[in-house]
Length: 325
Ligand code: SF4
Ligand code: SF4
Image (cartoon, rainbow, N blue to C red; front, side):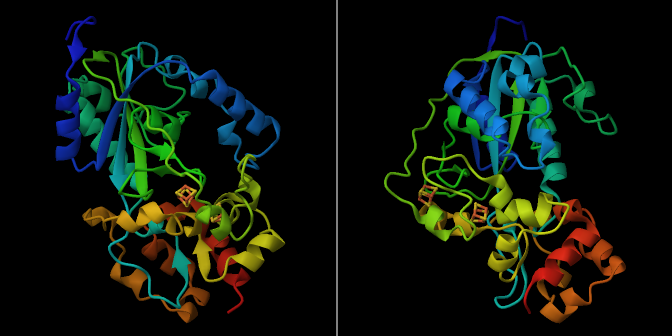
């Protein structure tokens, strides 16, 4: 394709659907809007990112996709459903829904690369065995594939690309589908024939997520208090859990879904059918007693290829030991 030619948006979306993505939208690549950039800078200045230093890193690239991928002209935003088809038994310890199956990073990256190649990216950019693109790796091709690990404001771009809006719970809400979606992006070096329209918030006067948050991490008209969030405390915090987290965690030993399950839009969620995202039978049969007796070997077997590896054995044990039962 020549640089001044336009890609056909509907073809990209049809291919995304064929690859199992639930939603796909396309936004023009441009620096992040000044009010959003300003709010993000202020959030960092206030230290609200807690110990998540990666949120501060590459700030300028995060706020301008062209600094991350020179030559990018369009950003395709994609969502993959992870609403669980099977839950851990009630009364037993719980993990956040996104962590029940295999690590989504691998699955998403593989699908995003497949999409990029199928719509015209040079195969060699995404060949198996090639190191995945990182924030440090300058590809001057204008192509890029990202999921979670790069400095990309994923929810901002998803909203720009018309997928949904960023709700009061700070999740991307897709109307009539909910928020249980993994987000990823394909950066394109071309314009497309039709860009999507950003979606306005439909939260209205609802505040259910705020009421459901057990640690007051979400406060209306204030920044998100990441250090109070159970998800941060149980996964990212490498030290002692806060007293507030210990008191609020209940049976949850990894992550927290309360502000998502409280959201009325998640009533429309449909269980995902992706084989890689289904929980292992062994995980489904874990009793509280088995969790308390978890050995390093059990942990490795249970969470091989899982996102739960992020918290490491000691972190998960810390969480289990902090429960009251
Ligand atoms: S994940 Fe849990 S603790 Fe964090 S904001 Fe949502 S409800 Fe609150
Ligand atoms: S619970 Fe209500 S306020 Fe919170 S994200 Fe959902 S719709 Fe918005």
